[in-house]
Length: 321
Image (cartoon, rainbow, N blue to C red):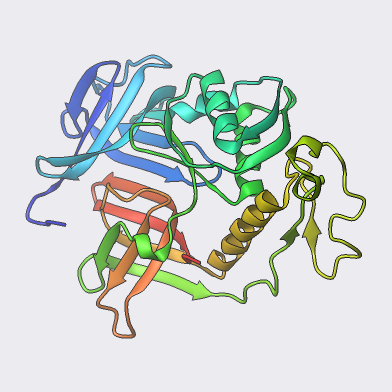
């Protein structure tokens, strides 16, 4: 990245686009995370800012970068506006927040995970990004007791897939990127401001996943037959039997994904780097130039913060499996 220009940002609320200086922004923070939270923007505005009068649900977007080289960092809608004696604080959330307010009751039989995810995103009128989840579900039920977002989170945990968002607000549901797919390279002596990344002992063995039904033994036409002993006998290790997984191939794929999840969590920590707005949760980054050798990690949370002290990005990371 180039440090020959000053950090800069533009914020658009309700169709009014202003630079951070013209909008009177004293602090701007944009965050995104995999697996749970919604994209979030928080801005502290000086008294009299042209953006202070925006109303709830106004469209909000932000770009961050240096000089005139800016990258999209946030797309969403204004949620709250708070006034103090010295400033106005505005908070906005990405489109996925609508899924925390959407409740539906549906049942899916012999559908792929991608089909279920696409239908649930449509229910909340949320844009679909990259959805790569071909695994088949024998039967999957969604009820109104939990919002759609909670169902998507549970489905991601069940299948070991990544629930994330893009800068345009679309929702992704895909396999986590591996160490072979690094998207950003940071330099140890220039971009890295601080770090605390540690290794932990991984679990002895990830839970095994076995099919609930007899599809693999008797054919797909018999998927409804419940296996008396899915393990073939008393389990020798921790085992889960998801009712939605009814054939051996799907169970094996889910088991592999959960094993990879456990392996990634054996490394955990934080990085503080020079502001890099293009980094998003789900990206894989390589830190080059470390005396002991290059390190590659996966981002699970990214917080981009611009204020009077400059522009920096804090990353919560894990291993790449």
